[in-house]
Image (cartoon, rainbow, N blue to C red; front, side, top):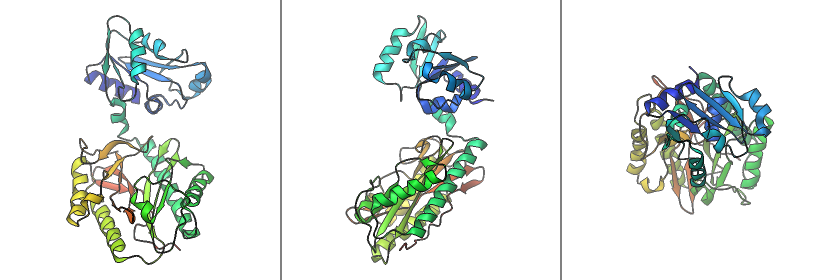
Length: 353
């Protein structure tokens, strides 16, 4: 069964007659199209793909043959509306802007109702196929390679920005691209979960958080390690050990059928018991695939259970403002009887000179 066929089944179950897909990541997932202007309409026997004249040739090569490929104007909404069936047509209300929605309403034929549909495609994307898993595994392998190269070249005496650029050069030399802007954050900057590498020179005797990911054929990886650049204060070593022990223990909770919220709570309770609960403010993890942040999530607000084929991060962190931070993150494939950790770079504290 094709992805579009599976989506048709979901659309029907939601009481819809069709779904307008405008999120380009979702369009790619359904059709194979990688351009920057395109959309799909999926319904009962309905497989419409639309783009403008700039991408017609590209679409002919990329878009799955099950779609009726059509050329529209650069603003595709009016042409999309022409393919709507009578009845209830869902739209991606998390993606379509208010202005675009108002324009779309102008073109909807009589007898058709627009209905907010939420993240129906994202729900399908959360369970990966074998080919998708192979690409994610390769992206994780490349990230491991880049980290090994970083250890060989060292950290002290270099700026965070220079190290981050070197990481990304290493990805491109391997035929990949960064899945997000790499984070290299030493000392107090490491206490900023989304720190931006700057001109600060990494010194001896500090913790450095390194967060990076690669892309292979559109699929992402995500991995974080925290390094030492020399002997550390006792409390920094203690925090590292707490995060490491929590991360390893939380991996043991990842399995098909486990509550997403429950896995997060398991890790959070351990950090809270150590008196660091207020310093772990983000979720334990998130899905990874065509986007580096996607469903499912492992957090206090998460819904649902993990399923076989999910790919998630497990990344507890503790951040002491103005001093240092520690985060350790693995990429994990959820399996029927547990999990497969595909980030293989060592997690024990390494001193990088």
